[in-house]
Length: 332
Image (cartoon, rainbow, N blue to C red; front, side):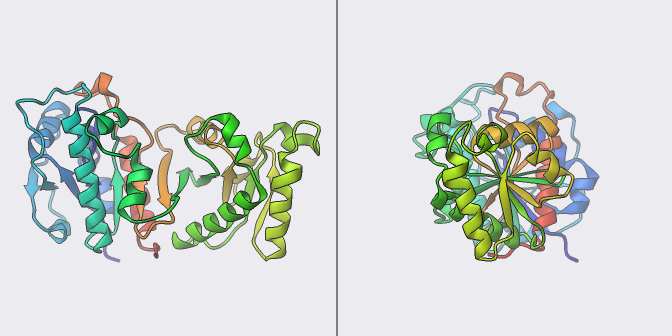
């Protein structure tokens, strides 16, 4: 089977993105799993090599297909959009925010055109994006706009545990109001479709409870009684393989053990805490429901340690491995 070709936008040049990219691609296991092409800036990538001690040479290419080669090099599409006379590592800069967006834009274009099989993203900085006038708060919103996807789904995967999220960056109070029968039903259906697009067609999805002990039949809240249970029962009548609500203090453990193929977390931190406590570095984000496959590290730009060679490349490696795992099965 031909190895998948994965585009890696370099991320914010002032952060740890360039360092973790060169470290990851220096790992022979990563190069064995997939062909990779970095979309970034040559000078920044050369500096990242010097910082990390990576000796693999950069190989500049014009077409993504040129990276379908087993040479021991780092293939790079050079956007040449960082002015070295103005560049300061470890500081938020509009120039870096704009450049990071341009790397993503190019990588998405390659994927939409079928030139690459997936995109594995590195950290970007929300403040740098804002300073650059980029009208998006983060990766998910950027990918949604560039692929014309309304409300993309976020799925975390770590050690086979898959977690979807009913809401993302809203207050906890607002997240609770978003737990409605209609929204739960819509998300379960779309999450099941997203799993199928990755080749995961067997197994039961579990919906986590919102309140302690899933509300104890209304003793600790009515969301389960009024929204979650009715949604699950309606879906089951339609033949959807889903159960719930299952108490959040046990559902993630049960899914990790294989009882469920995935969990729908009812708010942001409920699922984030479960996955990141299990293995912070290996928790990988997949944006689902789009016409392209995207995986991502789930940490920030870490400006405070940029340039120190302290950043771990484990998450970047795992993002590439996961993209390589699902790329052969992915369908639009």
